[in-house]
Picture 1: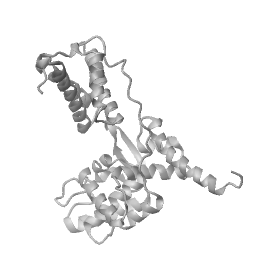
Picture 2: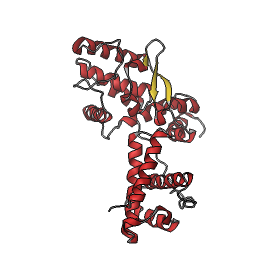
Picture 3: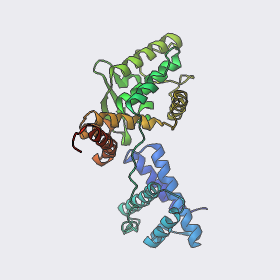
Length: 305
């Protein structure tokens, strides 16, 4: 349903501010906009308000009705995200003097289910990486991609945004741009660095792409920047060829990195820094996996349980 021009303009201004003031990605801004338009359409349809409905007419009751509708078809995580978008929108409107009070302030965020992130064991992770053949240019590229993802724990969005000069081969560190356009330096192992070197040397030899000029680190067959969707498809094919029974997403490699680091005794705050998490609580979800492993080891090894 159509929403009022007044409301539409406010939503557009808000999402623009997310990009310019907070540095949110295009995908995040699009998600916020979608959630707010969806909420506005609910108001028009359920209240018979027509497209003249104004934002200062929204109250807590309307928001609770909307959340009640969402509970019928959405997970708590999705509902929490949509409520966060609504709350942030009204906070923005207060800041700019459009309204005086935030009608979403007194509405509690749904309690989230605690889920253990999907990850691969060390043996399965090695089996996946070693299954990637290195005869062709594309296979060399794919080997380098997944060596980096596992070696550094970076997000797939961070990887596709990397350029050749993002890699410091001398120090074994890569520069990545994370959420909110925040830059951080992340160490990677020798195997990953070597895989990048071999791939770029073959790329120079076969495609004439200079090894001393900056540009996208990983290229598709048309010599353009490789996308996250393409990498997900490549991984899906590799997983099937390895005979894994459950799907493995690129993010599972990040989960594997964090879990294996913690299992080996890495400090939680160090892992937080490597992953680029703003909050330590975000990193702590990986300790559930490690505690499970510790308990199994304890039960197996301790003489007096």
